[in-house]
Image 1: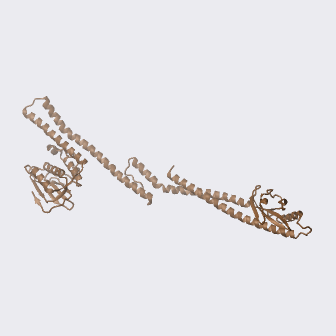
Image 2: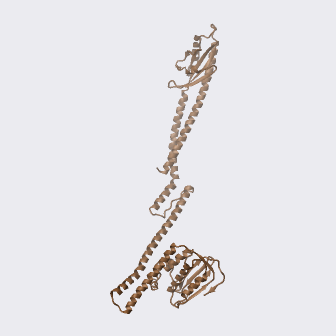
Image 3: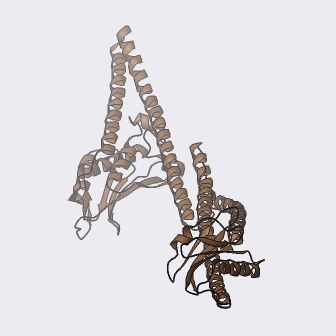
Length: 474
């Protein structure tokens, strides 16, 4: 059952119960009030008849010491005659509760007569036929005789009014329920509209439309739920896009890795087969073996770089405070003996917080890339500067430069700006990807500034340690 129907049905049941109970008590209250009024009137009528009987008994000529039964019957007949048209009936009984006179139609039931006591009045409601009566009884003392006077007052109209009241109220209640049902149907439909909109949005997202958002139609709790749902949908859409991008990146990585493996393996297999199947002079034999060795070393370097990237992604950083001079001294020792590219070192002393071996690997990769991108004899500058946010390391070359499009993708695994130049230097496009992962562990990132034909600068910022003053130059 729909939620709107549940709301509608609950409201109808609650309203019907409330109206039914309220109507029952209302009509019964009116009925009881009317019955109390009728009983008071019946009691008053009994009192009047009692007084009239006693008065009539006193007016009878005193021939006997006691009031005769015939006189009682005569008085009863006169009293009944006076009350014709009022619907009043009476009955007179002697001391032994034997009936002396009774109006035609008076009930034969004597239970009330037996319950009348001295100086008390008894009454009951009886239903001998299709009519309802209030039967009242009282004791009368006249001319030394004790008699019993009973009256019957027709109250059928009161019961008929109660029945009409129930009928009218029931019809009104049904009419109210019908009108209320129509109104509540529209109200429940309006109240549950946000739920239907959320259901529609959920189905759209289930079908793959992650950009769909639920329409917000209120500012209450349901409106807040809609806002939270749309926020959740936005986060989910971002996560889906990130997952899709990650899957695409993995597919690109696998494709690039397969391609990078194919070229050296083809050469290795070809030259190995040549050495195995043919006799060659010493020079050709040396060239073939050298090519196999060179391509094997490239495969080895690529495998080691891949392993470093995997370990870096899964590893945890164990940072320590260190002096930046350790890094610059290490880099100077690595490149001071090579003559192909002169290095210039410029730095400000300071202390940083990081892992020395990983940062050395970053600087070595950046310096190696600068050498590959630069022409022989061009200077490569390695510098360090203090910044507000941390210590800045940078490697600047005067090489071929990188386009803005390539700058955005250069840290992707196996991405190479100039594949022919990279392969000639045994490169596989993994160095900068490794640098990016190491810097991510340090809460940093690689900043690339480059102009085609003029050179490039690769820089990154590492948080400070305890800091030192002064500047230095190597």
